[in-house]
Image (cartoon, rainbow, N blue to C red; front, side, top):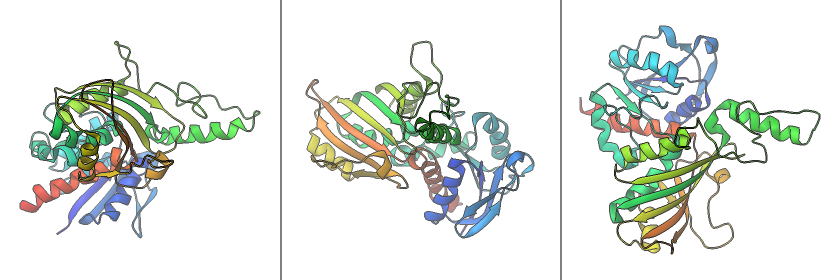
Length: 340
């Protein structure tokens, strides 16, 4: 049995990745609609060996459609997601608009798939922030074993997290470094991103943190456990695709690094590559196009009683966005739609 699926924002980086992943994972699609704003109307996108033309989101009727994967910004989501939901189509939203609504589930399937039942509240499910998604996949199995008290995370986030404009700015600035007459001042980012790092993602908040850092705190609490204390420093780095994170974890109980390594190896969605030798770890460029969240550099933290450090890398356009949304759709199909 197949289902009627709409991809909203199909011409963007995440929307195109959603189409790729639906095809790769052989999602049971009976009918597929690719939707975009009027300025992108008629743009062609690929789905397997098919070429599809985008339809107008503004006039699309969601009645009779099963799932809509939203990969547009919060403003468009605010306008169109309730329309789709009211028509009986489940919305899986990649924007930040609904993540903190207590009536809307925020789901990472490897972590809290049971929260899918909350879809009944508003026919909307939220996809987490890209930096949160990969981290909680690693935290959950360790939390189940030894109970996490506190997490200190520093992120190294690629420019694709800022969309096509971020990718273009890194590319253009990198070229201009070698051609001084072709100056490319920052537009998307607050400072030069080529050959630089910027400790600033999203807007600043009153306490001095950025909204990206606040998202990691709030979303980890909602997805994993409200009692976990999290502090984050989020940094934009000159990498096209792939987010990396250095994660320090303090537990209630002692957890040996060898046991932690074994737990993570057996956990869904995780690939452990952890050799104490040159190159015995995974970097962002190596994770691109992969489904897994890669964990390396697992080691005790001798400065606290029950501490571990680890290195976490994932393709932010996949696990951080498109893949997670498709996985949520798979859970919805398997647990809800197939039982009707």
